[in-house]
Image (cartoon, rainbow, N blue to C red; front, side):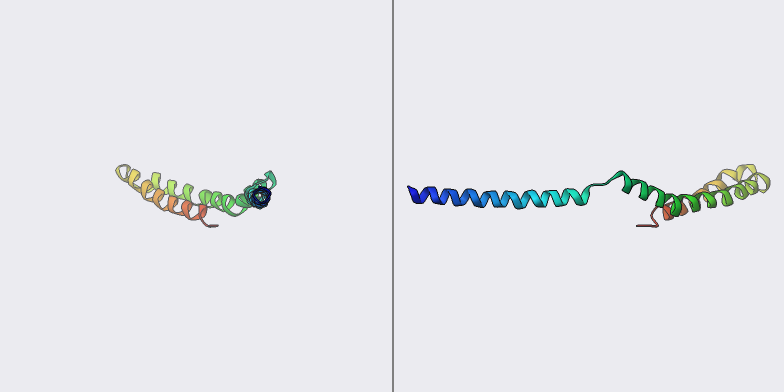
Length: 102
């Protein structure tokens, strides 16, 4: 009977060690996944500088001339097609800019 209680104590000690290791591992994983507001702010600011500003500048440089051409030279029945083709190119550019950092 004393031998059995010794075995049971050893099992419980082993289980406590396993639990301690798993708890430490869970905390390490949680620390790796935690995101602070500072991280969000830094990512947002970086994204603003590298993606938004160049995209906005491109928007201001591309769309006014395209619309000027559209309303000045493109026949009314083809304006819709002209803008859709321009939108296809623009959306491709936006997709490229959005995924540039990936």
